[in-house]
Length: 167
Image (cartoon, rainbow, N blue to C red; front, side, top):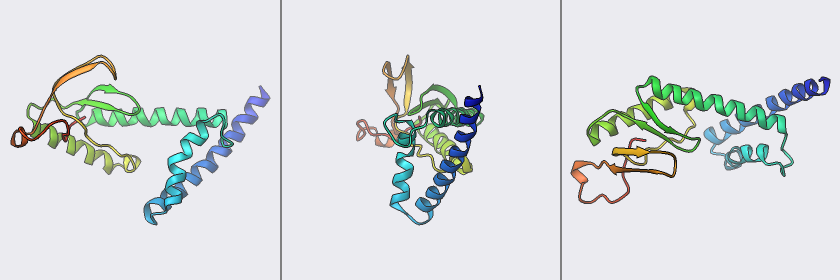
């Protein structure tokens, strides 16, 4: 029992150091366009989670996963508060139902949602991009879905698969 408590205290201290380093690198990457700081941020999660990494710590890994889950739940909560209906959500993809009936309304709504989310300091660094917009979507899971793509009426003939969308 005492060893677990000591590990938790040490991991909290280590987490504080990692957090400070991430904050510092984030400021450098954004304000100074420091590519090394950007690379550190891009690889930090992998270093903490990879058991072969010298940076790996199981308790630190667990703490990071807990924080990521909280962040993700908060993101989904904010989407719901903006009126979006969550159809499907994973850590790499979120599909929302807009309730709009035309492509332009759905596109305007998705632009509003994304701009509003990015206005929150916590979500400013997220890279959220709409990829597809469906008129009708049937979904079971990430790999089993089908639907009819919605397209802009003005560009209907020229559009194949690349569409600005509301996901």
